[in-house]
Image (cartoon, rainbow, N blue to C red; front, side, top):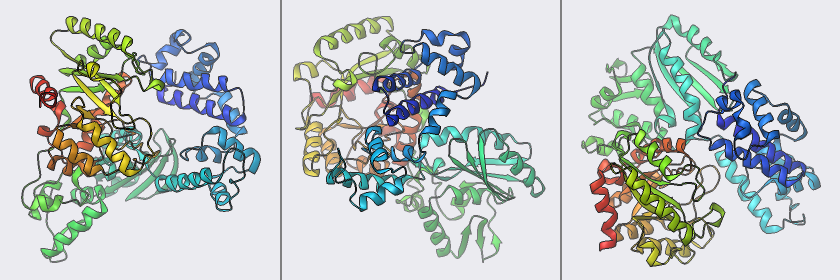
Length: 579
């Protein structure tokens, strides 16, 4: 049986639902596929095993028709129904659906009435004011569509970090384990833990006579869709996922210089070349040279930095945001490491829109080696996420009390993700808020307030004595929605004054707080917490992406709440309320 991931199956089901909407079929049928996709995404069992045993039919939310299609897809790697539907839908419509605010219903209207099937045609039509008189649109919607097209153009060559990270693993494993390869490492923005990534970059060293063989075998790997270009120094491929990957082969003598150069960023490299020039040296991907052509022999990146009088600069910091000056003064801090994380905040259970139960979360966290867990289901205003009214809160609290008794060696904190209302207040009264061990206050609606009102809203929220953490502070969804407009520096300053923590939401679609504000936040006394915002057990692994962003933001272990022992955490959670 061919191995198929939950992600692959869910993607196909979601696309079927979308295509049904584009065809104007019964909305309930489309919804069944959307719901099926969500069910598959949140399964804890292996999808291949469920199909092989036939138990897929018994999964709640998967009916007979869906189970048959999932079985066909998993066992054969294809689904005839899906392929037939795709033939009926112009390919460009899927790209149009990436435009923020343009859903299947509007895309169908544009297709039916204007015969537009590509983003380019749609942009031209907007510029010709053809959407103004289209039923259900108008001048305002037309402008929003144009703005959305600009947005996707800006990011059309970028991918979320988790997608590229997953794509890179088999490629890097192949190169590293190849008998002819001496050394190999990831490079590019993936190595720098940039929040979005253009492609996979791998740098490897080998003997000259082995280049051809390595490159040929690289292009023949499973999952390769297209060979973009092939040579003995660089080969580029496109994977079936659409992600591109480059493999560069150099001599082992050149390896550290090439690794540094192709890790980037361009701005960092420019600054490094300028520094080398000031020392009468020349630096490029082939080496560091004294007197133009005398190689300064360095076996590692660390030795390159030493040769230039610098402390080692971790890849995450190489963005030309002051790292070279810090390295000159030996002031590069000891950055947070994944191993430093001791507990978890911000997970959702079946009480709101999560899948696992409370006990299930605790058992899994213990299995993963964590010492404490903070449960945060959605509050009552989040009706779309089954937010908790007071009666269901009490039910949850009773279960938390029972689980605490069952696991006395583990600390379970009773928390909530409380919606920040438009006026900046939280959506429970003080009597209820006082019963939580901590509160994550987050914005989930009214994104389009004026910058002044949005700023005031968040400042009022962090000034609330019960707000422990500010959740995903900018509201951005990477490659899908820009952050809401506000004065983030003013919000950070207010959080520093009130002792409010600001989370780094580790979901790869958020990675928010933005790393660019990391130094500023720490200068204003902010502690962060690397929070997975997990709705299923496997999402706990997203913490590693959050750690990458924390490192990129110059965060040290001392300034990360969930890198502290449980005794210190208890003190930190109470500190603001006691002031």
